[in-house]
Image (cartoon, helix red, strand yellow):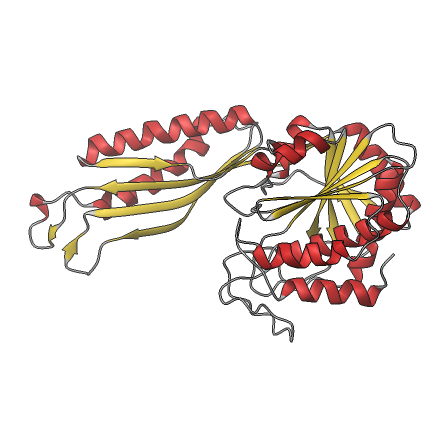
Amino acid sequence: MLTESELIQIRRDLHRIPELGFQEVKTQTYLLSFINELPQEHITVETWKTGVFVKVEGQAPQKTIGYRTDIDGLPLTEETGYPYASTHNGQMHACGHDFHMTIALAALESLAHQPADHHVVFMFQPAEEGPGGAEPMLRSEPMKRFKPDVIFALHIAPELPSGVVSSRPGLLFANTSELFIDLTGKGGHAAYPHLTKDMIVAGSFLVTQLQQIVARRVDPLDSAVITVGKITGGSVQNIIAEQARLEGTVRTMSPQAMERVKAEIEKVVQGIEIAHDCSATIDYGSNYYQVENDPDYVEKFAAIANDSGVTYREASAAMTGEDFGYMLKEIPGFMFWLGVDSQSGLHTSQLAPKEEALAIGARLVVNGLRQL
């Protein structure tokens, strides 16, 4: 097993080179360089786009266990003050994927030297943050050859202390969809509004009506979120805007609710077109399927965690999204939260997870791969 100082160095190396989805060229090169230094007699390595598959042959295999890690960063300017901060302007590992990769490499190093009983497949997946790498990776040729019988993954949890992990049977993460709505009307002089079709006004009405979908058209015993996080429109204060764009996200606790919410969004947008005499287009961008944990494997994992000297806590379902859900849709398994005790949260420019959690996560993942 790698030492704590080796784990920290790998994490910091990766933290310096965050790359966006399907652009993880330096990251893939770093991963392959590490993998190529391992004993090769038990492993098979295949690349897929900017990702990597590594199969470790088991000593007495009766099944194949999969472990997935994500490898991309976010389009965010880092403000941690780290001496090892991102060297890629406007990009940062603000979701902990540098931690995720380091733990996966540590587990791979352990199994390459001492294989588990069963086959193990490591998947270093690109583009989790967007446009979504799990679903195409699941359809890839290497996956067809290496497809595991069970699969698991982790995600860092800033709000949990180091030494604590958390998961739950059933739904862990929500179904999520991006939402982009473009409105087109007719611009003109602010003194002659009657000759225009004002998309600032249309966009404002649309924002308020979208909120009524959850309040009045979704079963109150179900859960859904529609968030409009960005509005753009117009060019100057005395010109009526011809264009407006809304950007947001939709999150639900079931695939059926996602379908219903999208159908209601489309009705509301059609109404805006009629009421404001404009045209509109909807783009749902990246869509992620819910993370649904297998209850039996969660129970086994909880026991492994406790036996590993790690505190296991039952998690609550969250409206966060993760494209690992596509893999769990076809392969039984689970995802768990790894406590990293950061004052700043995920997707923030000051995320600072405690590096002591690296060794904890690595030990737990190795034990899981050997005992599931």
